[in-house]
Amino acid sequence: MSTDYDTDIIAWAEEQAALLRAGRLTELDIAHIAEEVEDVGKSERRELASRMSVLLAHLIKWQYQPGRRGASRQRTIREQRRAIEARLRETPSLKTSLTDPDWLEGVWADAVAKAADETGLEGFPEDCPWAMAEVMDRDFLPQRP
Image (cartoon, rainbow, N blue to C red; front, side, top):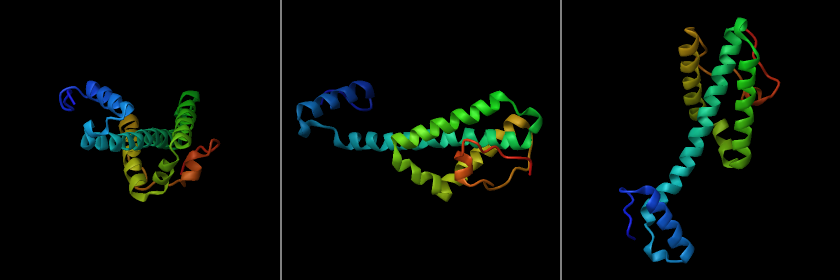
């Protein structure tokens, strides 16, 4: 192995791939490969959380700002749902995140913070008031509480 992981990760990754393809397994940087594989999973989870946070923030804004409901907000809601559905199709194991209360708590907190920052409003629910089936339902748009 001639390229150091900490010096040039791109060159390192290309070298590791070449070693794998050549079957030169004893030359692999196993510790860093394992770390990178784990990071792929973390990246997928972060993307799902980010998209869900945006979706929830827009659902909050839809509910609490009825005067600002419009095609743009509805389009964002639709796009985020589509992207989340695609992520779940491509990586089915991510579906467990949708039923993880700790994950949902963090995503909801991010969504509330986004909605509060973007609207200047306060007093949103502490916990997500919608079931995940509603959140992902293409026809669901919340009404004023």
